[in-house]
Amino acid sequence: MRKSAILLLSLTQEQAAEILKRLPPEAVEDVSREIASIGEVTMDTRKGIFGEFYNLALANSYVSEGGLEYAKALIRKSLGDDDANRIIKQVTQQVQISPFSFLQKAESENLLTFIQDEHPQTIALILAHLPSQKASEILVGLPSQKQIEVVKRVANMEQTNPEVIKEVERGLEHRLSDIVSQTFEKAGGVDTVAEILNLADRSTEKGIMEGLEAEDPDLVEQIRRLMFVFEDILLVNDKGIQSVLKEVDNEELALALKTASEDLKQKIFKNMSERAAQLIAEDMQYMGPVRVSDVEAAQQKIVDIVRRLEDAGEIIIAGRGGEKEMVV
Image: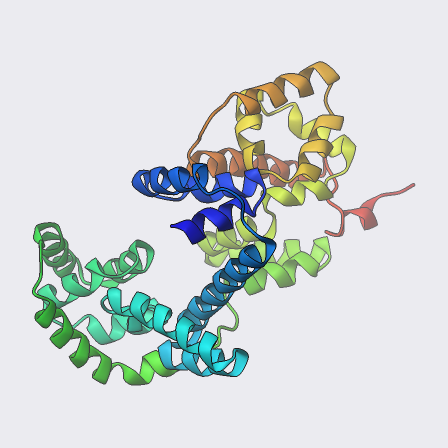
């Protein structure tokens, strides 16, 4: 707790506040009490704790990337014996606390292939110990009847005998060792198409998208959403920004700008009256906490307006070929 307090004291107030927001209330209380009573801390002590924190963070990233053995090998290459042994001990303890940790780096799609024929109770046990996002991806891929069986078992699951968990872990680890140890390289996908079309001229992009629309409109929508994101509004010229703002109400704009970069905020504000910009800034300041999903929904509405106006030829987006259609 003292090391945590020293680490937070060594950061800016804004950085420390961001970390505290993510801690459980009891941890915030404990570390705050420690900060209040800590007294003077030497620079050497601060540097030592920063180093330890950095090495632990690095070691945990190695575990996520290639597993515990891979992490141990890299740590031993990077640090002296004493430091390496200490970090390895800490990381090993952290990994061992979490059952089925060896599944963390397996792709959900590959993991699903190997566990979908398991008994619902076994799948429930696995999902209950995986991060919610990965568990959700696997649940979605199961047959509907098995989904119900698994969800019922997860909901009714209470304490499970550690020996049972270890036995299931051992069996799975042996059978899944091939997929867990492999590193899969992702190539292609919708995001790759979006990147390619973003670099193509406007007429080529339009022709391809119109051709795809007839065969797979859902795919076209996925590509469009990835081709132009909210931050890309920076690429819209000032006249275009003004056209977009005419169709957006202030409340929605304030919500959308909540997570925007400073550059984008300034670009938006300079295309509004000083009074309107001040009101939006005040709305953002006093808005308080908001759901990320609400911010993203507001941003997507504005992105949809930008895309519609671009398709109608009413605005120009730098780098997307529209400049070639202009006559000076």
